[in-house]
Amino acid sequence: MNFLALSPQAAYALLASVALLIVLMYWLRPRPLRVRVASNLIWRTLDMAQRPALDRWRWWFSLMLALATGLSIALALTRPQAPALGGIAQRVVLVLDNSPSMAARGEDRISRWEHALERARRIISSAGLASEVMVLDTLGRTDTPEWVSRETALAKLRGLAVRTSGVARMPLVPAGENIAAHLLTDGVAHLDVSPDMAVESVFAPADNIAITAFDAKSSLHDPTRYQALVQVFNASGRPKQVRLALTGENGFALERVLNLSAGATINQTLDVTDYADGVLRAEVRAQGDGFQLDDVAYGVVVPHRVKRVLLVTAGNRHLQASLGRLPGVALTVIKPVQIRPAADYDANVFDRFAPPERPARGALLFRPPPVTWLPAFGRTTTNPVITRWDQSHPLAVNVSWRGVHMQSAALAKLSAHDSQTDVVLASGASEGVLVAAGGAASRGITGARWIAVGFALDDSNFAMQPAFPVFLGSALAWLTAGAETLTHGLGYVEMPHANAKVTGLDGRPVAAVSVPGATVFDAVRPGVFTVASNAGTTQVVANVIDPQVSDVNRSRFAGESVAVAPTSGLPRFGFEPWVVLLALAVALLALEWLAYTRHRTV
Image (cartoon, rainbow, N blue to C red):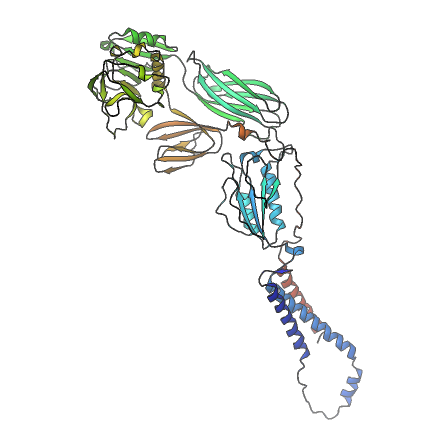
């Protein structure tokens, strides 16, 4: 037996002292009371009738009751622990693997996480009632590590959950002779485990059908046609028949039936041209699928109808021919004197002309005259050389700007504080801006997008370059694009806009935290999130599409027995021994009182 309140030496000394004190009190006899009587004949007769042996047994019985009562109270003060009553008090560290694969369900339809929680409860219950427990997880979602009681540890278990994102890592586990550490995992996550830690497997094979890639984009040959590219992965250990369904707004639906062997991956290309625009949802369904996180993926289809483009020029056959040959473009050509305010075009192209007011739709301008809604292209230089450009901007993709030569060009000087424009191309290190772009989706300014080119096509060889149609196509796509769309995995998403509002597909607000210069929110499930700020609106598409996450059977315990080992040494009672001792002391006091009133004790 161990003692919690005192050391073993002090506890045994206390018990011996109490026992000795009680025995001494019984051995001490009070002085007899002297009384004068007329005759002692009656008392001699009574003394001869007494039974000395019975008196001795009454004395011993009274002594035993007193010793049992006193020692019970003394033992309760030392707070002993006994395996038969409350288990052995110890320090237990529980590390639960809460990586995404722990949500997989086996044939019993119970998730690995639920098995881990049940096993953790059994480990806590097998420890002594006075034990201390530390609950940790591999994704760092628990509170500050601390030693807590069994009841608090059980409450912490109820607050833990499987995470849908993040990299599992072993937390810092305290070490010591009296510390028992347990790791509950399915063996999928790669964890650096120390040799003295008990690793317990909750792995059970699970069927899983996953979408590991999804994208929707226009055809390279015909921008008016749209295709959805879907990759489906069978992570199960057996063949599966899979139903792939694509759904969108206004009742759009498309379905395919696929047959995949175990561990196989298949790519599907589906024509979704009939879906005008909006969020497109892909889903896979299969019998017995035990992991739902990767069953759904989302994409955004942008408008892909024929673009109505207005060209305003006094005459430019190269520009007109290049625009007319672009696929998916319906071109209208007018002279500057014919221009009228109209909003029935998707984009405008102005050659050496600019309307005094910003057009309602996007505009591409070559060598525009000075207007208030454009940066001032004032200073003219001859034979400028393009030395740098923003390679990440859509207007610079697949365009060899070093091969563009100009006889003359107008350069714009933009202030460092000008937040209304994006510099796309520049001439020299500090000479000026040659091509600039701006608009609502760029820096938050209200109004349509615009692209201003500081040189005319007649003053350069740009129209003769193979990349010129690419530039025109990229410019029209950028001018007519809706809200910017970003792709992201599950987990925390940081947007470079402070105080932005985030909403989900259902229009409900999503919890977000504003930090200096950014807004952070947690994409827990696949979906499309809309981030609105003063800089405009951005759509964030969050999907899993990671084969490493979907391969839930890639465990180091695969092939081993999955039975959960029983926990030995479970306590018989739900209370500590000192409570029993106090109850025993009360019972003994009641027994002694009853025996005394019936003259069974002295």
